[in-house]
Length: 351
Ligand SMILES: [Zn+2]
Image (cartoon, rainbow, N blue to C red; front, side):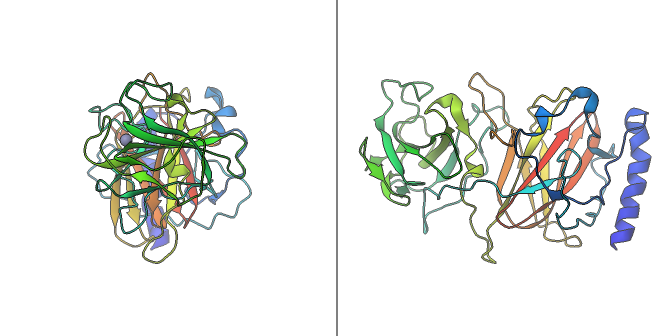
């Protein structure tokens, strides 16, 4: 089964590569060992130039309607080197924050408007994530910290893009292990504030209640993570900071994050990345997730200092994932693995 799947995929690749660019596009070796990524220090872009660019994605077919090719066998990540532009890297991440909402309320992040999303151009680029819950639901401190804002932004503030954007809000400042800059968490649209500026709070302590104050559509908690400064331009994707939830098998979920870039290795805004979940190599698709890369805007959406990602997807069950997209009329795909409580890093460079 695995061998025949690989043969099938290889034939598809062989038939498509030449048509793609008429030249000797190197083909990623899908049987190559995926590996733990030692690439921590600077992120791949620091070492890539246009002339050094590795093979880009594998063209599969000009027609997206063809059946999904079976997942290739993905060996355990044990090799000492890792190139996320060809395969994927498994990393530990820095999941240092608790959920700001606890059971029995909804602890999951709303998938329709993730960090960096514009909801297909209908809204401004999102600098946080949403936890949709009823007004009055307790809001909890995500980590030990100090309250530096507890009030509203009706008069405007340096930490807010315009007056009455967050409504009633709280900002906490944290010192987190292994992070050499202050980390801030912001809790917006609250109906009630139960924190006082200047006081310490403990992780999990109730600091307010969910509401719909400010520029909110419905009652929810808007949650942000900011790094270095309490500034609207300093946000980071909260899914890369929050401890993953646990699935039905009690294992923590994993995540996928990465970079989608043009031939000059600049981040691209792209709304149609498709992520499909297969619990194992031979299992049928169990879920699909649309994915949009971070949208450009006046207030830049920054990737993590380490991974420089411009897309991320959290709370994913362990298993095999097919990430695909259409570029220049050609369908490309990459298979990656997600492990419990780990971060899968992958990079796409389109031509
Ligand atoms: Zn929001």
